[in-house]
Amino acid sequence: MTGEQPLHGGNVSAGVVRVGDTVRRPAGPWTPAVHALLTHLHDVGFRGAPRPLGIDEQGREVLTFAPGEVVWPDRFALMERGLGRVARLIRDFHDAVAGFVPPPDARWRVLIPADGAEIIAHHDLAPWNLVAGEEWVFIDWDTAAPGTRLWDVAYALHGFVPLSASPAWQREDAPARVREFADAYGLDERQRRELVPLLARRTRSMHDFLRDQTTEPWTRLWAEGHGAVWAADADYIERIQHRLLT
Image (cartoon, rainbow, N blue to C red):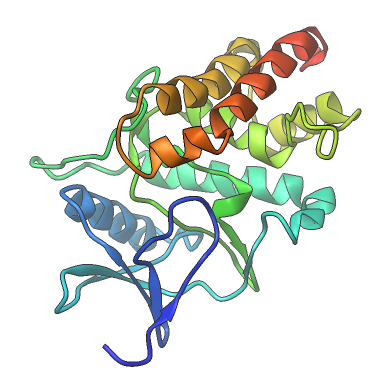
């Protein structure tokens, strides 16, 4: 197809292109279920996700293009004032997806088993999957699968606070930012108590997932040191856990 513009960014973007106002991505067995999910979100008024447009002649999924720029890493300064907006966007998604009934033959791309099946979670709510334009839109829904609200929130907090061991990204005000996110999302006291020990466990699950993989792109990411970063971040979260949401 002429006029294809490769889209880069993130760690897994091979084969993703823009064609006009659409994005074409490699499809998989999970694509029909993901499209049913995205259709539901738009039907109930949630606009923080692309709209599915079917499959093209090359067998790729077709989605609406989200205008704007990906937040990570060059626009992360938006999170200085935008953390609450992200938390509310995630809450809106979780509320919108609560009424979704998956197709009876739904197949999901489950990379890391979640801690429950309360909702169909995104599983990768992170700055590298947030496009900031007139509207803020989460992209890369191909790993959507059963999970819980707190499983999604714990992962989002790691990226958006961020809860990072790296001197370049570590923040003294991380506990305050966790509370800001929790307040904007609307977590109650029970959820806050459950969230704190989940933060390090969710982060460490990424290290364990990469460690155990034998195929690309995961083996490449492990070789590049991504696993070590996730492990260091999990250790850091455990060290400051007593300061979080207290």
